[in-house]
Length: 631
Image 1 (tube, rainbow, N blue to C red):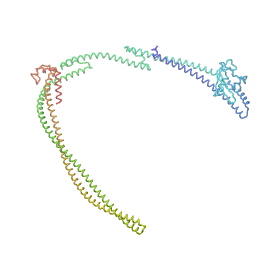
Image 2 (cartoon, one colour; image 1 turned 45 degrees about the vertical axis):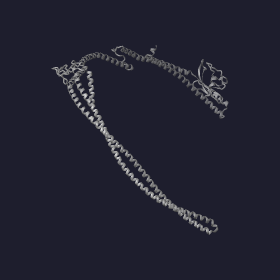
Image 3 (cartoon, rainbow, N blue to C red; image 1 turned 90 degrees about the vertical axis):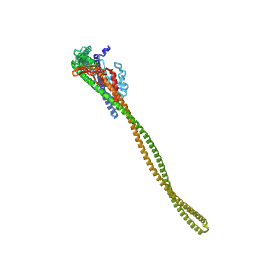
Image 4 (cartoon, helix red, strand yellow; image 1 turned 120 degrees about the horizontal axis):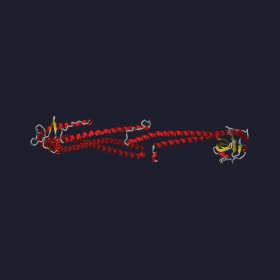
């Protein structure tokens, strides 16, 4: 059951069933809305009719207000007009008051003036009480549905009533309409809707079934074909490839996959043949490489390979020919290398002796230069010390000259101040003289005044005495300041001469300091130059020592190179090589019998030296190469 829910056909049928259910629900909803709209329209018509009736009552109330009619006359006239008013085919109006007393009813005149609040329909609804309840509601009007019997009918029918309260008179004006015509039209609509729904459901179910079959059928066939391909059967064509839907696209994709499997099968069959060819090529190469590993350089592959591997055979033959030529050249060059190594060893020995002698001479020279450098450096340091002392003496002399100059300026300022004081004392002397004259005049005036001026005469006498003492003191101060000015002038002259002498001393000290500085700078430059020469000699000595060591290494490398050249001849002696069109085979010869040249034996032309271990020769040759690179 769970598996069936996941099948595509089940889901498609579920969608079709859902669509059928939605169409059915939509049909019932539309029918319900049609019924509600029909009843709402009928209620609106009744509302409009009651508005017409109320308008008549309003007109009568206006006539009452204008005094044209009394209220009783207007109400009676209203009853008559409403009883005679008709609309539609059988529409009429009736009137109740708030006490449910019938005021007017054209088809039930016997009800007028009676209480009909107990009137019920077949469902037990008290009709007039319900109308009273609707009319007294806040809206003042509204519909009422109830069952009522027509005058000429035997059974009651559903009726829609509409009541509206006219407050000035307390009347409830109502009307009604039977819904038999609405039900008749709605019955036709229901039948048409159900017929249409049945036709739509049938068509939708049939179309859904056909669509489901058109999808699930090809998919089932495609699924069965894919299962067959998964089982290895790829010869049968894929169904539904001509279908224009997505299923056709899937079938075309599966067909492409089937074609790929066919090509892969063909490729696998071709791969078997290629594997067989490759095994033959690998076996031939293995045999020839085994011979090559034993030193046989004449193993050419003469038999042609398959087309895909022919280039490999040609490359192998070319590589073998190149290796053969290289070995021949190595054999021919081994003697030349050995002779050159011997010459290099001899030259290196001579160079080593000369380098050692040169190193000893450079070492002695460097020692002598180092002693000279130390002496010059000591002299330079002494000159620099004297220069510092002279600089300090020059600084002190300059400071003393500054002090003397300040003293001279102070003396000049004292002289200036003395002159100002002399001027002030002159002014004081003049004031004393004028005061004396004033005191004299005051005494004269006091004598003229007689006894009244005696006190003033005493004051004048005292003022004259005070003025005389001030004049005498000013004279003494002027005399002292004159003597001080002469002494200050003499001091200024002496201080000026001392300042000139100090300036001369400063100039001499400056000249001496400059000369000592020049000597110190020259000694410093000489010390620096000697230091640089000493450094160069030391570096030259180190380089010479390094060269001597390197020459010794080069000598050892030359000897080792000579030995390695001999070993190289032994290493290549086991190769079988070709010379022209003939094959050359290795022949053993004692290295002691011919230490410097290979030995030729008859027509073979082979080369052989004493066998040496290949790994040891390679190691020593590597060491010789490293020493030669250092040299």
